[in-house]
Amino acid sequence: MSGHSKWKNIMHKKEKTDAQRAKIFTKIGKEISIAIREGGADPVSNGKLRDLIAKARANNVPNENIERMLKKATGEDGATYEEIYYEGYGPGGVAVIVETTTDNRNRTTSELRHYFDKYGGNLGTSGCVSYMFTDRGTIIVAREIEPDPKVRGSKPKPVDEDALMEKALEAGAVDFIADEDCFEIATEPNDLTAVREALEAAGFPIVSAEKEKIPASYVTLTSEEDIKNMNTLLEMLEDNDDVQNVFHNWDIEE
Image (tube, rainbow, N blue to C red; front, side, top):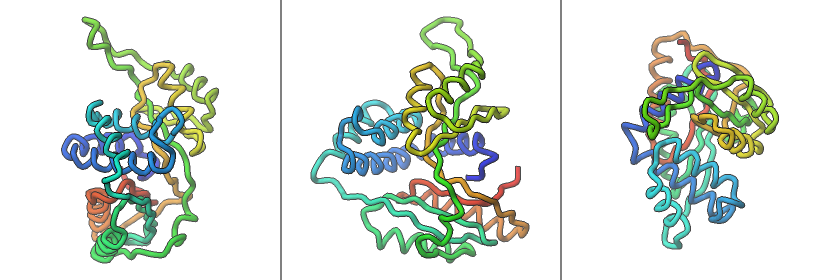
């Protein structure tokens, strides 16, 4: 999503998680299935699987549900999923990349093409917009550590910014941004797991840790119709069961 409103996007997704918990569980389950097929079922040796288990916990997936996901993913009778990236343009020339996990490529392609066509965009060919984006790991850390519910009268503690920045850079982070509401830490994609685990081990409150595609430049929409269509296109994409993530270069005004 638009880079300068990362915290608000995170909170928006968490609100959606509460309303559509089963859908979120299903999407993470699909990712886990692919991670196990590619790297094995042992989280110790499979960094991608460790990241997904952490992602599930960050989305309040109960441990028993995570165990169920892992067992289902290692079964031989489950669906076979593949990761496919779709690229295209939204209204007003907004560049869009859609990350999907699907067991039916034809169904997913048809549905996404319908969304783009209906809301003023067009689905393009592979590579038509990906050159505008750079892969990056992004870790969001809250500014306060939640009080321990087991300790009576405990209160939130502010995160030590200097200690966080030192630990993040020591673990391999490439950038550190102190926002008003949170801390945003950038990593190389392959270093995301190591940096996240180092911060978790040090007790810092991780809100999210995701691999993202960051646009080199942004597009501003001025037409009310384009803005309405772009919002609807994003909603349709994010509500689709096969869609895992949507990246774009729309400069959303606050």
